[in-house]
Length: 176
Ligand code: FES
Image (cartoon, rainbow, N blue to C red; front, side, top):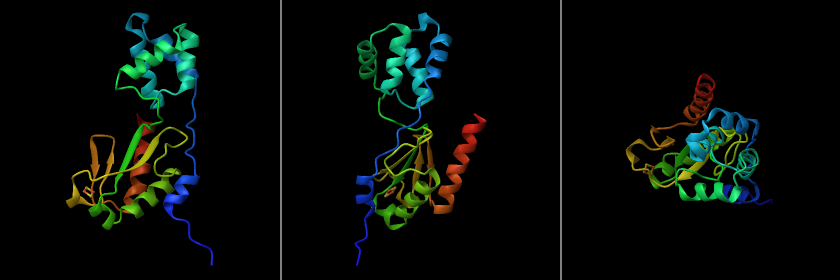
């Protein structure tokens, strides 16, 4: 009888997709930002657009601005606000603590994976969502709990509510 592949094994063999990068935004930002505002402002704007600062973006900034990539990386690594790791505009964190696990967190993750089209631990190709499992977020009475970014908490989550939340975030993105 064939052996069933566990979620963990599946995650190990599935690589995360690489988010699409539209480099034309780099030129726009460099034009918009007053040169006196400096590189930090440029990098803040670009991170707001892409969710992170990938190598191709750093190279493009370097090419267009004439600033050495090593200097740009010096700024990125100095300031904690910057990251070179893919991160979606909406970071969805599903609590996997004991209370949430017992209350159905695995089903919630399945629903998010299906609705977003990405494996837990990855960022969607359109750069909109990062889906991750986290330890107890301290709201066990509301299990299962999901957080969106740092400020938004959703308790007593269900698979249907998870799918609705993804649809809601997509709508939010279009309206903003
Ligand atoms: S286990 Fe999920 S909030 Fe505590």
